[in-house]
Amino acid sequence: MDGTRDNDIQAVVDADRAHVWHHLTQHKPFEEAEPRIIIEGKGMRVWDQNGKEYIDAVSGAVWTVNVGYGRESIANAVQEQLMKMCYFAQAAGSIPGSKFAEKLISKMPGMSRVYYCNAGSEANEKVFKMVRQISHKKYGGKKNKILYRDRDYHGSSLATMSAGGQDERNLQYGPFAPGFVRVPHCMEYRKDELGLGHLEGEAFGIAAANLIEDVILREGPDTIGLLCLEPVTAGGGVITPPEGYWPRVQEICKKYDILLHIDEVVCGIGRTGTWFGYQQYGIQPDFVTMAKGVASGYAAIACMVATEEVFDCFKSDPSDKLDHFRDISTFGGCAGGPAAALENMRIIEDEGLLENCEKMGERFFANLEALKEKHAVIGDVRGKGLFLGAELVKDRDSKEPVDEAQVGAVVAACGAMGVIIGASNRSVPGRNNVLCFSPSLIVTAEDVDKITDTVDQALTQVFG
Ligand code: PMP
Image (cartoon, rainbow, N blue to C red; front, top):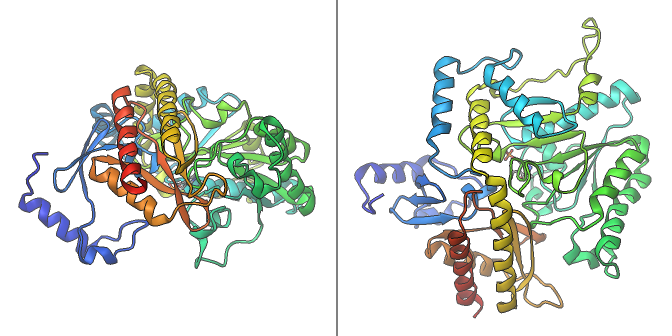
């Protein structure tokens, strides 16, 4: 981009203002100001309609472009596939669909079957439907409730919102679907809220998991079919699980015969430094869903992955018309998706991006810890790999969140200095007070330092 605005770009801006409805956006300000339009991307950088260059520290705003922008090899893989065979409903198979499923499962010991669809919300709903069907097949329809956790997010459809742990997102969209039950969060920083303020480390983690057991016993174990959790909570405030939490969660699921669904829509495909977030914690799920990083945004693809045991529940005599999974996702048959996903995985492997993620994640975390020493407004730093958050509070003792407008000012100040960061996370309903970072897995030490230096300056500008 050369920084000048030609007529074509102006026409794009005009058409956007006239006709495009942006996601998560109040449009009133666009009567005066222009919306940001991203025109180009290369590696870690993007350019807007004014030719302004940014380091993208959030991989396409929502943790998606894991291998960075402008990857010719992915574009070529998609083009070749589209010219050979663009689409056929996934009731039939495809070459990239088979190859990617095989490759994916090779990274997921214990898992077996891949169901293709378009979006994270949709993949999660597939699991919810399967669990309801399994409850009919095996438990007379009774074991059908779905447990979800305070502050977790699973999507924008009404069923996934019914499993939504961020109250402020759900306001004005009810009524929601029945059969979804909330369990408490596991956030160590705010353990007082859970009545567990006296516990440290593993003792806290186990006690936080036991809060799930309390809900199960209250509801009746024979009514609960599924526990659905994010491995590291993303939009709810980048909440890393405490030590001892996950093994106890797994034990509880086994004890009460409850299927475990890990929503890897954000963590999946490398974000935390392993292929999947759950692999950091040594657990074995029954379902895993993934979307954003699967093809790094080069094609729309999401996957629901299940064990062979789950799959077997849906195999039987074809004369029983109710026995298979009676579901379809039209665009789950787009062959460009798995073609892009296969090349995306090759890049991550061949370029050692999981290793880079771990190494750069440590550097990023250490830089944020150093900022915490300097800025009293940072109450807590959390994260795993290149998935990090810094929670901003008015006072470290009260932990009261800073005003949302101040967080917006930090984000805007970073943007003005050419770094895009996020703050869509919440630790308290209605308050966006967690700065969020998720750069592409290709990020260099220099860029990590540039991002955190910019945040340093922005915090000084806003909070002194
Ligand atoms: N699960 C999690 C953890 C997410 O963060 C998101 C999206 N932010 C979703 C599910 C929903 O994915 P999609 O927007 O692709 O439907």
